[in-house]
Image (cartoon, rainbow, N blue to C red; front, side, top):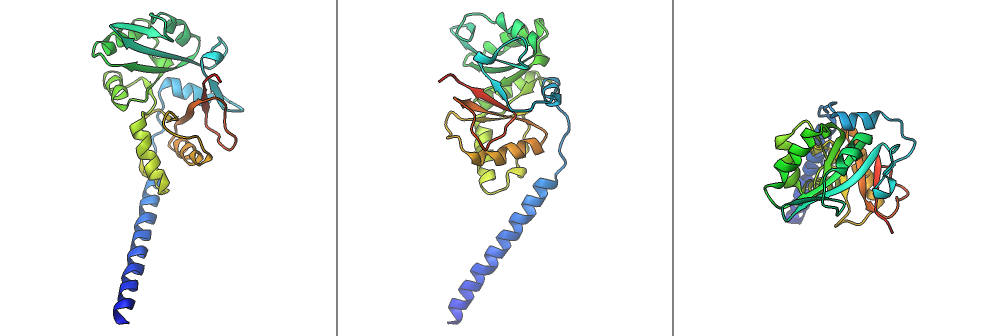
Length: 227
């Protein structure tokens, strides 16, 4: 009987200890100082008074839309934008307002060419660079840390793991925009806690791609793909 009481006492005090550690970690994360810095593109979008989330995508591109959208990739030593072999349309898209730009490449030649093109036309401050690849985004940021960036999927996976334990505040979001990539995830209202954490850390929060917004979620923007 004494052994049984001792065993359950050990389990009880272990659980109490773990709970106290969880409380301490949660308090640490939530009370950590948050940087108020935002790069120009993100700051200007944040200051706009939107009554509802932005709808982002090719079909929404217009001179009056605050955030244009494009995809570029590098293949066979050629840059293409929205499957057209040219970067020139970037100039007009980025000069209209701001541009959410998804990038992808495999060749080491890609980044120097892209960087030179963007700096030549002085449009870097108008672009938010996004990709599912954390490594690719890191490569760009090391060369141009003043530009604006989303996070990749690896960081998102880590954030989701911490958020499942209600400890998302421990993950410092170094990206300027928290992007919830849905390529390998199913959309659900549980992501609202990620939205709230992103906003708490002074970030814009985008979700996509989706065919339509989901009720019960309130990010700053939805990346919409056609049906």
